[in-house]
Image (tube, rainbow, N blue to C red; front, side, top):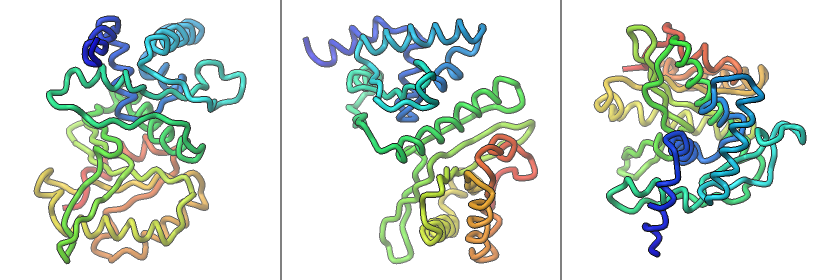
Length: 270
């Protein structure tokens, strides 16, 4: 049987929720069992939710469309919720059935804990935004992770430059639409690296490319893990040319949802 034929047979065994789980894994790269529960099993008591997650992950693993990495988060008592889950090659093949052309996919391998922690932090922002939207307080219009959120543009010398935010978010809040680039900071990058990335944002803003395409330049949010890191990043932002300083904001990761949805920061800079 051909690879496409086997993928089609797998697809026939998957429910709509199974497919939604695969699409989230494709977009976010990694998710924990807990994050998958929050996204796809929001109803019922915790015991019932946990049982459904375990059964679903076992079935998807047995079908070979997901892989479970060896690392756990949340300690040894976290159960299935503590496992880190990724999309397998067959999972990508199933999703590729809807694509008119073959798509490249990233192979899930055992990665360093620091990389996994960063990917899962971005995923947690997405989960939080989905949950916030369920309350009716906002509408999640778009969430693009890497590399879909990246922007490619030409520098002053004609060289190709790629701006690499961790995510791009578009939210509907009341009558407003809020656009944001996300930098999920884990306090692992040096401050000179932060300053260089700020400069790339300013260069991209000055091209007018984003404004011409979308009508506004998204606010750039640095989400940081501690008050000390917040102060350090804020000081780096203060070194940006004054006319571009309003592009940037910084907040604690724990304050991301109220910060991203507050109307006094609507849109971005023209």
